[in-house]
Image (cartoon, rainbow, N blue to C red; front, side, top):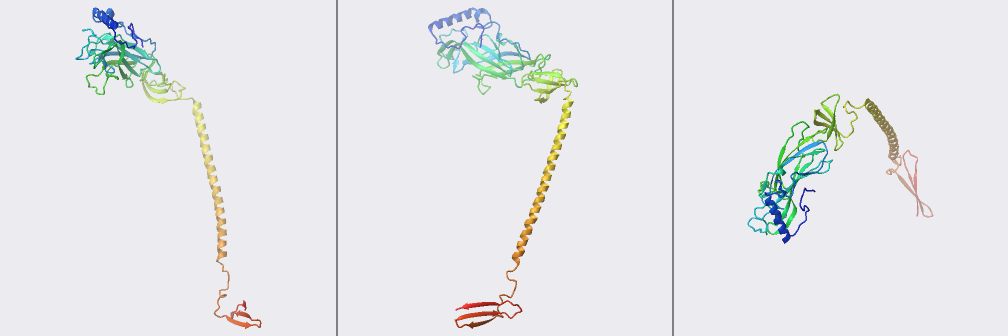
Length: 394
């Protein structure tokens, strides 16, 4: 960060000593002789009349920013410090009637494809809890490559650092980051070149010393206004589109984002662009006359080939199903025939004569031989010729 004609701008903390006290009184004397401003410029202490601005030669969006008012009721610094004598305390090291709080404002903006752009003001004395006038409130205009993502404002103090509880002087001529304010531009609608910019006013709370309660009277607050306008060939909500109107229909245009490279087909009215279709592929015909006839022919040919392939696959599947079905029926009939034959054979009786074991009409004749053998003969009186003879040997 750079400052214009700043005495000892580095954030080096120095312990208060006798020589430093004399130097502080000398600076206060010079400030008093110049009606409260060092160097007699009437705009602020430790600073030039003009803001220090970074060089920028980009072209795409015109941003106007103006700081309107800053309030810090307790003149507080981070970590329970202050730049003024606490109420009810005695601070003999401060010269009465001379402001001991000196604030500077740095405006920072950045676009996605651009380095950080910033503007730094001089250090302005702040006697009470708020300021709303001075050279630091003038409007500033910056050229950006596209709409910035946000507007950041950093507030710094250069001077004494006093403990709020004990009123003890801790540091002298120190550079302290007091607070940070952030305003997002995501929802801001840009205007086209040649139209009147839309100025928006916002009141922001500090990120370091602000609280969740916006009604708190001791919060650090900053009021600012800004506007964003597309310039040059850039159009669109973010001032990042390069558009070529259609030769067939002037209400449409082919647009390309310089940030993402995405091609879009847009409704086009002068330089006012509304999206209706975004494409991730390259648009070959900038006049939006459609694609070449060769693409249509090859699309039809490939569609026909795809249909034929699908039909061929379906026929193969049906043929396979039919073949497998015939084999299954043939195997099923063979197994059924063999099973029936086995069943028929098992039903046949082992002995076909029903009266083979009917012995109600059987006559037994016993013959005892001389060697004590017994011969048993059974004869049936039926018409059958089968005889069963049993021999028993004693």
